[in-house]
Image 1 (spheres, rainbow, N blue to C red):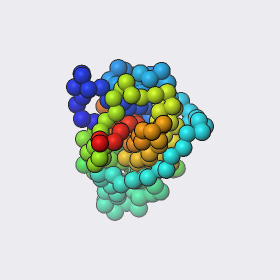
Image 2: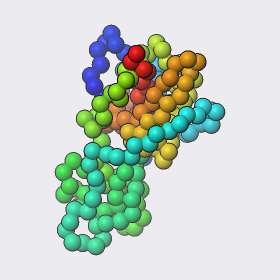
Image 3: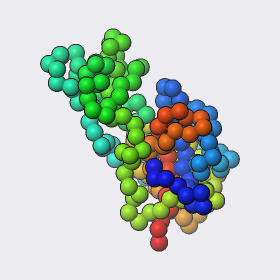
Length: 200
């Protein structure tokens, strides 16, 4: 995510835990959305009745392919920690790939097989969507927060970099799943939801 000026607070919801981002405690004060319109991480998907037409972009800046060492045990089924697409390969094969990291608990088989994805980095976030600007913290409502929480907690429907829109009153809001930087409650880059409003 781009650096933020202190006078231009941005609304975004971030989440994480050791196993899955979007499952944790409240995060720091860098203009994130929470149930009390401050900052937060959440626990379980909520059926809030808030919908929206999801436009899922499952492309990523890299691809966790086989390292090519000829070992048939390297390639495996697909996996998606944090909603980021990856592949089940050996830990050593993943380590041989530039800018990739492996995650345990997402793949069947022995402990040497883990899910390999492009290493989470805010530098991998797409640019601000054309025609949209980051939403100001003061404009984020409780209903928007509930909607963002639902998106954050559903990495299957909303994988990394996916977007969806929802109208709140007369305001159309776009939510995009992005990598968020470390903060007071998250020691590493983690899955988050950023809210945008039309620029015009």
